[in-house]
Length: 235
Image 1 (tube, rainbow, N blue to C red):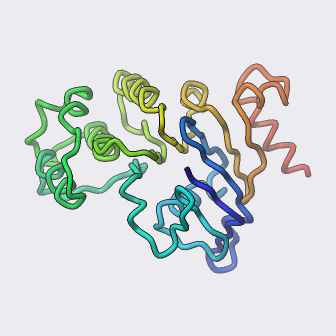
Image 2: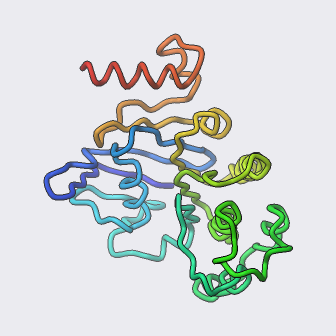
């Protein structure tokens, strides 16, 4: 579905991505992990076409995304923090996105699923952070995208909504590529088929959560990742 080949990106004199090579396949969920500043968000935004790499290329279904915006129609993007116009209510915001995309979204089901129907005509400025995040989730999923990219997707969600969100993502796995960034390792254990660990703009580990546990002979992902970081810093 998505192939990343020798990707490099620098901001001024700081190299953020250093020769990234990845193949992200259908029917798989990938968790991208790494310390703050390791290049995770830059990689996501490069796939989305929001950041232009210095060199290398990204193929979407075999076609280079450079100078091509149509592929984005197949992507649902859930940013960590979404900013919405304060004067719009939820219904108007959804209608505006449908008009921009030129098609009807499956937002009614998602609104009901996250119990937002009673708030659908409230203005965005009146909503709590958790409710805004639910709207964020609806907008990212309502067109049934082939690829779902998420940056800290459960930030702001209450425990019940977090559980419902994870169950929903599990149901979306079939015939889709899901790529997400999180600091919550419980989400990695529940959702990820593979872990991609980035440090200083390079991929230092790629494998399943169980393979990572086995590699470092630890009982938890947290301890295994701590050992992964320590070993790479020493090297």
